[in-house]
Image 1 (cartoon, rainbow, N blue to C red):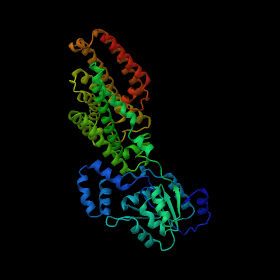
Image 2 (cartoon, rainbow, N blue to C red):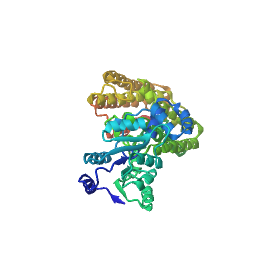
Image 3 (tube, one colour):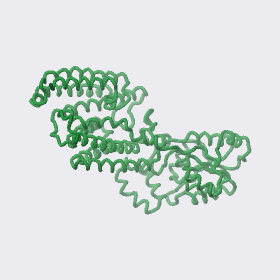
Image 4 (cartoon, helix red, strand yellow):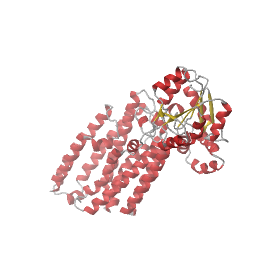
Length: 489
């Protein structure tokens, strides 16, 4: 196995290799760091979820037919696909040297033609046509029909081994080591243009463990009820925390898979592992299922009530990812509910009686923070001269109204806290309830401060994650805990 380095590329351009020898280039996993079959499947399911019912019947008529139907139902923006820049640069150099380039792919012909037109590098296209799946030996036969003489082939998978065997030069791109060893055992000298990468770091980023901090809200009912020493209840909350974290990660991955186009159009989100092509889509689908099953098993171990709450959370989150996040105002209400459900999960895990005041405070506070998230996105869109952020129902000129809604709702949450201080529940839990009034100006300061940060365009993440990780916010939280402790005794 040899390395395709600068010296070898230079020799191609200098005429060491005849310009008459064409290069056939695979698309999925080679020219692009993704698979268009899975891309169109996800695109179609997002637009028309009932497509899932049709896919098995399409496959019964052949894989090529299924690819054609998915390409029709799930159109892609080929200009946003994660092209491998190293491969594109190599091909551009070979074309400049006079080499003929042909895109040879098992993807549907319509998509292959769009990719070819977008790049402007290829002299021809070989692709699946709805009846014939152009892969492995079938692809080799079509290459032979087009080129009776020697040719080079750029590929990435085990299905490419028969084509590499017939090619004058076999070039591999991010090919698994096992496939390379199989090629070597077949006597094929493979030149490696780009090596495969360890997927674990990218997968760790895809599950977003930093977002798990939101699930600390599960412990809130335990703290608000002044139950600090019951280890069994604390353990139940801890298991609920893990269950919700695994469920959230499964939804984050699924959301990324369904949002590939809009993420790739975003200046920051385009770096997410699936949008950037750092992780294969099948791995994401498998991880989603595994995480969800583990999450459900943990929740059921704690109790059926928690499993029911987790199920509501998953369904609501999935609905948000598929449709609701694109509906103005409904999206922020759903986000507020998703945060509040975490508090409800704390009640379910501990079998404590839900507090009307705590849930009302949480709902208003989190609605305000959800509005802040949209406000920050609109600030960013305005900086980039984007009229309407993709995948959202808001426009840049909604900025002021969104800010007003969010700031007012945040203040209403503090007003609910002020009303709560005068209730009989407070007298039962606190020896000096009047001292709780000290929390009100502290929270007014914090809500005003984070909105000022958002208005300056400096709130670049989820406000809840910001609140749980920002140093000043944590200090304010500890001050509130201190005031509540002083009010207790």
